Amino acid sequence: MPELKDRILALDVGDKRIGVAVSDPFGFSGTPLGTFLNNKEFFKKLEEIINQYKPTKIVIGLPLTLSGEEGEQAKKTKNFAKKIQKHFPHIPIEFEDERFTTDIAEERLSVLLKSKKKKKQKLDSISAVVILESYLSKNPL
Figure 1 (cartoon, rainbow, N blue to C red):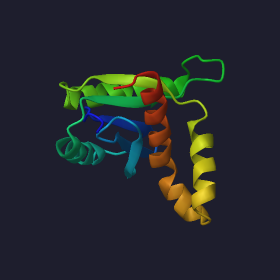
Figure 2 (cartoon, helix red, strand yellow):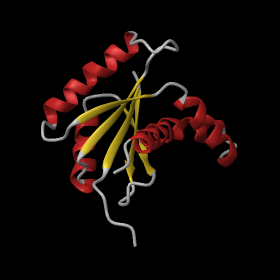
Figure 3 (cartoon, rainbow, N blue to C red):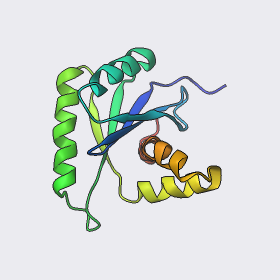
Figure 4 (cartoon, rainbow, N blue to C red):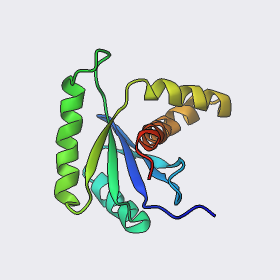
């Protein structure tokens, strides 16, 4: 039987919404935990998630430009990460290139869901799963 690993939390941070996913106990894949509004209440929800899953790391998708540079959105994401670090200083934060994750998430959802409304509701959390799986493929636990 595979050995249990530390859990990793992944975030897909947008101006309006934040998708959240967590690695499975074996570090093979990610599970979507939901999409939440990007507001002050998010930190309460994040605290609940952290208390429940006890992640040892948070991976945040970094929206680089197509040329691989940090644009305005990447700067916003890094500023948001600083706020998370302030609230949860005991959990290290790493960044993962999130280029094309939305496209991959949309492709996965198009197979599973037909309703545009349901796809939109799940898109950010599935994007967080894609970010997490990308990170895990490069950094096996």
